[in-house]
Length: 328
Image (cartoon, rainbow, N blue to C red; front, side):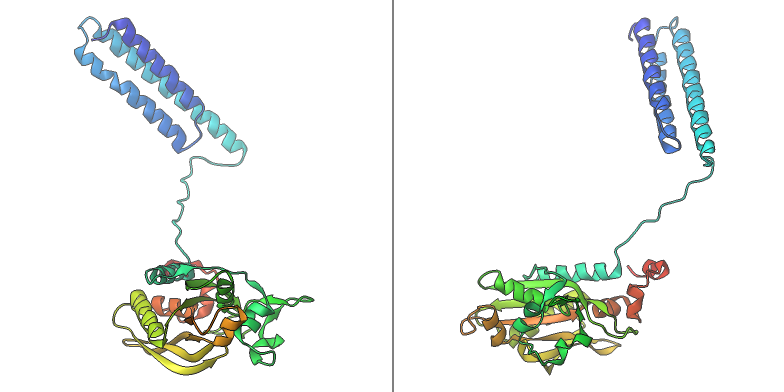
C-alpha cells in the first residue's frame, strides 16, 4: 500500500486533469465521454481502500467523494455554459440528435466495379481516356468514314466552333491504348459516353460503356467468345449462355452482336464485339500481319438493369433516394 500522502496527491492530480478535459469538451458525446472517463479513473482508486490501513480508509474515501462531487459540479457547469451558448444561437441541445444514414455505392458504380473485377480476373488492366475527343480518335482511326451516319452532327454532341465532340463510345480508348506503345495489350475501359438520343425507358443522352481490347499474336473469334462467356458467367453465374449474331461495325471484321441467355428471361442483347479491323491497326501503326485482336463494348446500364432488375434506365439519374435505397 502506498503512503497516504501519495494516494491523496494522485487523487488530486487525477481530479485536476479530469476537470481540464471537461472544461474543454464540446456538447453532447464529447462532454459525456470526458465526464465518464474521469469517473472511471476515480473509481479505480476505490480498489486502494481494500488494501489501505484501517486508519487511512476514512481519509481516502472522503477524498474520493469530494473529488467526485467536484467533478460532477464541473461537468454540470460546463454543460450549463454550453447550453447558454447554444440557446443564444437558437439551438436546443436537449433535443435528440439526427441519426446519420449510412451511404452506399450508386448501382452503376457498383456494377462497374464488379465488371472491372471480373475482367481483371481474366487478365485485363484498366485504361482511361478523355470524354472530350477529336474526330481522329472518335471516328477516323476507328475506320468510320466521313459520310457514315454515326458522324452526323445530329447524332453527336459537337462543341461549338472547334472540331471536338463529347465521345460517343469508349472505343476511343482502344485507339489511345494502341498508340501508347507496342502490343500485346489486354485492357478494359469503363466510362461515360454521350449521344443525343431521345430519352425513354431504355435510352438516354448520357450512358456508360465498358470497352474491352485484346491484341496479341494468333487471337481468334474463339478467344473472343471464350473471354465473353467467362466474363458473363463470372458476373451472373454459370447458368447463363452466350451467342454471337453476325453484325457490322466499321472497326471490327468480322463483327457480332452479343446476346446473353438468362433463365426465365430469354435472350438479351448486351453489346457488340468482333475482331479488330486491319484498317484500325494501320491507323495506329500496328502491324496487322503479325498482330490480331478482338474488341467488345458493353452497356453498363444494361448490365445493371439485368443484375438489379431495374425496368427503366431513367431511374439511375433521377436522384430519387427511394430507388437508391432499394438497389445495392
